[in-house]
Image (cartoon, rainbow, N blue to C red; front, side):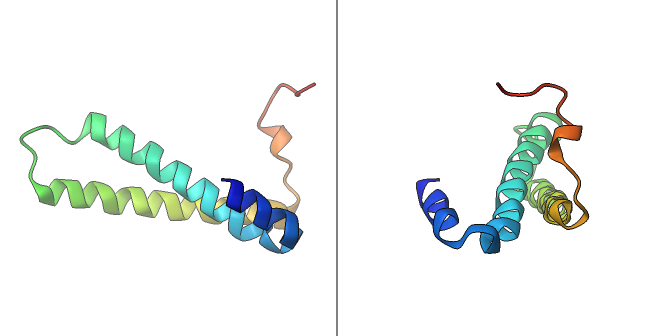
Length: 87
């Protein structure tokens, strides 16, 4: 994360959109994978089920990453979704 922060300091807004995509897609991939791991995958599941779960998680991650990329383009403020403010 330090390397991403240092790169963000030097490149500024040019790196904002790819950074939003990377962070949101990695986070949503992990959340989807953990969710499906608890619900779908059992100890007796085959490897085919695991690869289907990974593909679904990648699709969800790319979709959420794309929506995170278009947030600054349309001027949607993230504070609309967060009901409290940091002091």
